[in-house]
Image (tube, rainbow, N blue to C red; front, side):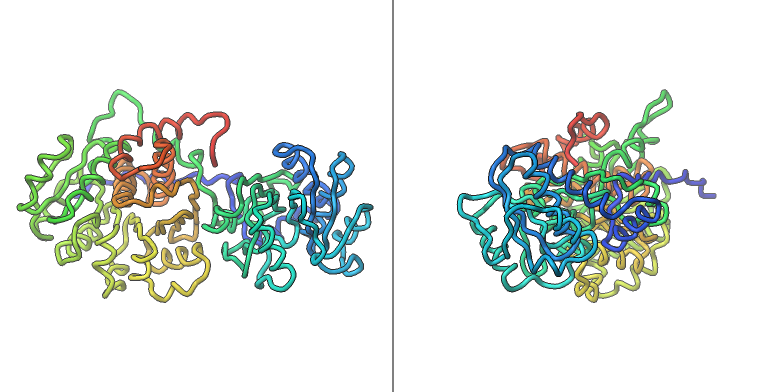
Length: 509
């Protein structure tokens, strides 16, 4: 009889890390107003938050506030008025005319008593500080004409830009650049960050991101019901703490990795990373011809002879082998395909990466139909296309990952600067905690090993994916200089774990 498996340890997703879509943010605004807040109060608070951020970062200097025709422009008028009253030299450039403004934006414009012109006459001589209040996160059409030309000039001259809500031109839901977009040094958004802030373009163009409290009560999230969160150790770090007199190597989990005959370094990196992240044991299942290579490498890695997938199934007889990683260097062959199907049939925890994904490029439906247990797939964009070719037309990376998770019944970790971890039930975590140094051969093998090591310790696929992605990025931050290679990463994992467990007072998000 198969022993009962302990419950998996999953994320505790916290409201303060929620990421909202534009529709969800509009719903939060509406709920706050229905609860007694006035739109003008929220606009005034938003302007004050932007001015506070500007004052924290910059000394008084000439400022040009670029205001659009909607509420984002209204926020800009409040910023202009408050900066002027604090003694800053301020000019407003407005897209359109004041009499075309409506609602709260018109109210804010009426209170502005300083100089104002149109976009075409925006003065850039003297290199003023630019406050971008042109378009907010809800922009859904390409920017063109005078506005596009002005953004291009400001970016080309590398003027310092502070963006209100999101750099104008970034779609708040998809992160797509709508024709053109500002590159900001500082972005101030309100209540909660948006999906677009944590897209690849958002991470590149937002600069330093500040999320300001403008008086919207957190309880409005009860009606909004967000389904996406930014990755933060506070949501999973408690799952990593294992203390007590009864802890032993088997209680910390036994990860088995399918090693290949040629690219032997991949499985070795994965095994070392798994042990560094806390797995009690790591075994590399090796073809006979490569066993000596694996045995002469890291002495703490166990090695078992596995010539084909029939031999691999014998490993499953040991229930202590509670988690598996298949794909790093395993080869695109029947051995990999058969081993994947055998593990899936056992319903044990498994990470499918690299070759394990590509091996099913011609039969993705067969793979998906076999998934019933805890599975984490970790594709990069190219591997994702092999299993989900029709989803490449979906602009939003978050939506692509969500649809793939629903279709496959696996948790999808879609790698990149904006790594998206999507569960089959619709929950999404976005990890932007990474450096460009991770773009090096073998880095993905380390990530797969970390995720597998965490799943061996009982973490559910989404929790393991989120923790592994953050710790992977933090390991790169710990290196802290050019020249990072994959071999450096496992040795930095203990420092990353320490940082997650005991963060400094001023932690990176």
